[in-house]
Image (cartoon, rainbow, N blue to C red):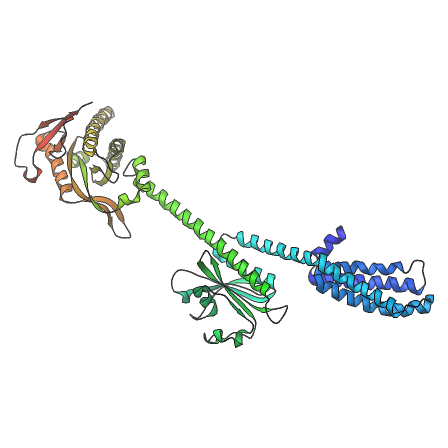
Length: 501
């Protein structure tokens, strides 16, 4: 068992040396035992079957036939030697039977066992190379392993792979080249009409017996040595990711059909791996993008609304939409801030914004923007809300209550208090992504936004906390109509006194 294992681990050259040494040793023993006419010397001749068996297993029919012929020739002198020493004379028929038996044994072993072992060896080699290709996580590594594997499997002199990239095909580089001793990544740039680029573009394979004489390659004007070539696209599912070429066979003058099949098989496997790598990369990109979008939206809407938007991306398309706008501004903020340090201002303002934004989110609103100490929010978009006016009004009342609690806390801490005015206006606005590629934001636009800001500014004049436009007024809300004045386009205004429970 150990001998077989060690024999299998030898290189091709090592196996030949090992078997030839065995043959020499066997025939030395055979001739010495025959020369001295030792007992049972006739049986020692069967020792030669061992190296014959090993040759058949290792090299199939080629090994069996070669070993059989070699051993038959070495047996020829032994026939005359037996006659001289033991007086035994082999007739032509007996000699022919012995030689035929040796030849038959070698061929039989090579064809039956050796052929299967060679097939198993080939499958094992393909399996190892496939695992190497599949184990790569980068497209460059896949192409490098493909070039290495093809050189090994079909015994080519050199292989090269072309990796397709987005953009002009003239910039596609030859990415990996292998010659059986080493494999390297390269940056060679190919001419636009090079056979590798042609194969990738046309999704077509070329099998060439003499590249220098092939008319298809002469048309490209490419200087190619007179070697057999296999050129095949690296393709999976109709998508081409590059091309593979193998040139020069170390076994014969041209490549066999089996070599072509193996090359195409390896190219297809490499294409599948690249496809999976790109799919995985795309999934990771989409996942990262979704996380970034969720994080971005979560700053302006509640987490449930953000999830709804991500599941319905059409909501982000530009459109006219009826919404209810809420504008909240801190009164006399400039005067208050003059008595505070910058650190104190930012700390208290951020605390205020945190609490107020939480209230907006709790009522399914969307924060549009911060303008200094002013908050602009709206209801009814991006996610549809049939009761956006009521939800906005309830949020306004809750914001006013939250500010009262904050003021009580700030008074105990010896800090200044904030007073705010809130304006609500229901209207049609243009909503969508605004900006350029460097900075975009989902926002509302239109004259009606300015009206909402103007309504908020009137809270100070009317000395009230919350004012609603006539369009926002609802029957379930307890309202008090404010005195008529020259409101222009604003129309009737109402003070929010409370909400029906």
